[in-house]
Image (cartoon, rainbow, N blue to C red; front, side):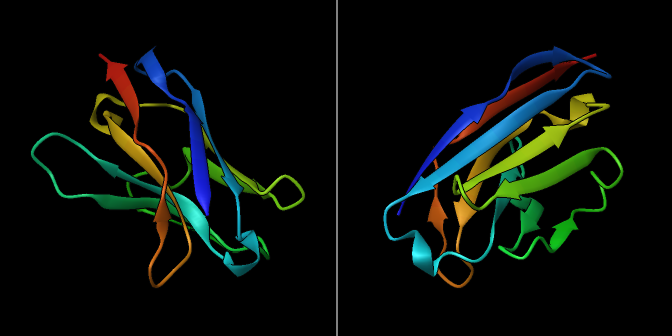
Length: 113
């Protein structure tokens, strides 16, 4: 399985960004997709995940601001990030799978105050 991540960038506080993560390869084995993030000096943390059936979960810090969705026909997950805060600044990593997930390349998200 290969994951191609896109999106991210620099935005002012209160702004929005959208991340995408497209999966290719042996995708029949993939149920859950989502994103983790890692800020400088901090551990990697789960941001949001979604199953192929559309069941989503979010970190408390992003609930109400971020929305994860998935297009199974395109094997792509999306993370819409609204009302961004400086503390959302991190490298965002998309993943696919549960026990031993596959990882996409990191995408930098920088929110300026």
